[in-house]
Length: 520
Image (cartoon, rainbow, N blue to C red):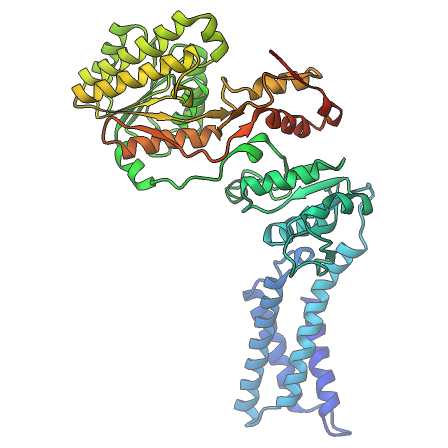
């Protein structure tokens, strides 16, 4: 406030000295105007919180606050001159206004200038290349420039937008497009690459990552926007690129209102609730405020884990648990008649293809007989909707697991014809991160130093993420009229050998690139 007082008085006295008649620089008009301007400045500076700003982080919003406070103060001073002296010293006030903004703004922004330009952290920083010169990239660059604690020093942007190339943003040059990443990394000695384009499609992320993988620089990606907005992470908490980023699909638009309509306020039962798919289905259901969520599963530890997670994250959710085997027909009927669910999501199944080849009778008992038990119990209890989770391996099945799931689909379709319950099935491909996925196997092999084994280099699979698979299950229930087998358009298939190579790249073990082996 003392500095501001000196600035205000200096500005008006200098402007008056420049314009006043020779020999008479100090007048009553100047005295009254100075007092008015001084008092009004402090009032409006307080109102616009100029004394509560952290000026080392000053930006346009702070400059706008200064502009408002100074302009209103000058305007009030002009009104006082008109009331007391029937005249307004327009030229004096105009110069005062310009000097006022210059001095007030300069006194604030000089600290940011000193901090950004001259106060350097003692530790060495890694040269960092930011991919994306849009809103996300500039946000990352500004955060890194202002943080003395960060070990990253942004030195350049990469952006395919030709209108931005060869320009400077936050004093950082936009040095080229994605195809030039390898050359830029060598030329500028880049040690870290940050992908900072939140709106990227999976295909584009894959392309950018493949270009980054040609270098020795560590590649990370901006956290998900929803995580930043929710406060889970800050913009500077970059995460490693994950296989889900490279192989997952772009989000599918869902009928949220339709899903909420048949779940909200209803009793929902999920079989296999402790599994990777079943537990995610439970998490998704919990967001739609069911009256009761019944977790049914055979493994007590997995059911306990998802129950504790849901109780911790959604304390108001009404949760019940049932430890039971879907092969136990009497228990299934008892549970359905006791719980009286409105909707059932049947996720319980044996899904490991090699294991089921060696134990076909278990696949039959769990996938076929178990599904029949749950379906008939649901029909007997007058359940409204029954959604069975199936697999793309049920299409022209070549394995025991696929064949048993196809028979389970046929049971569901038959039940729809003889029951008032609406029975539907949902098929999807390999789910990233599920316990039956090949990805955990590859990760274990990489962790052990290789080799990463691939059955056939021509083998392809469709992939989707666990949350998307689970949302698809909920969407099927909203669309169900009875008897359908829903299939997601899963986009382009992915070669398993390419998946293995991507996982090796993501691990950062470049020497393992050649250690792919074929396993008969």
